[in-house]
Image (cartoon, rainbow, N blue to C red; front, side, top):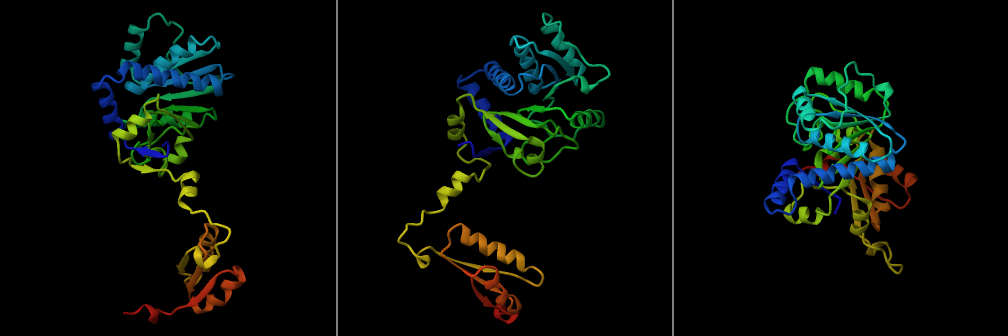
Length: 302
């Protein structure tokens, strides 16, 4: 059921449910997330050796630090650079990961020396606009022409509505966890999320039981095929439904024809077009199968 889309509150509540019922711990969930990202990078970007990871101060930043450790230990000769957005997170990292001395904080940032960017600045919890200083950094990231992998959510993109919160990372790939987010597929989300890959860690069935009503569903081809009934060979057009298309105001005849043709293409046996008198004679020239009638404003007066 990967067509289901969830809000950030649904995902957060599901995470709490998992932790409370000891289905999986918070640390184990982070570990699985980082491991999934590592496998994705090894599979699709094994030749991209020089990696920069932008690390925020929240959970998303922790994912980035865990991912950096895995990449270094992958024996794929990655060179990893961490760019800490927040100095406190940098200090905390150095205190807790003193054994990884290869990590650096960038000073003057030159993205041209890197092969790939990993965005771990903000996750799904962002609820404010990006400040000016961070906006300048995000602009630089977006202008780099490098592959950009955003972890869970492109930083700066609202997970619930797909709005850019002042500025946002324009990812080429988004690796998201547990469930697809509504904001990745609506409004500006489609443009900024790139290709979205879902990792549910084998917990997807629980999510769909826990959230019986997802925020929305993607209208995938397989769903459309299930909705359109199969037309048996012995059936003729009168047995396969009748669609009425009304429209075609002055200068808008094309939209009427496109709508009527679409009705035919999805299997409607009969399609009747109700349009202005001056358009009626043109209908059969564009699509002979269509039935046409005319109307005037008086026909719609009560």
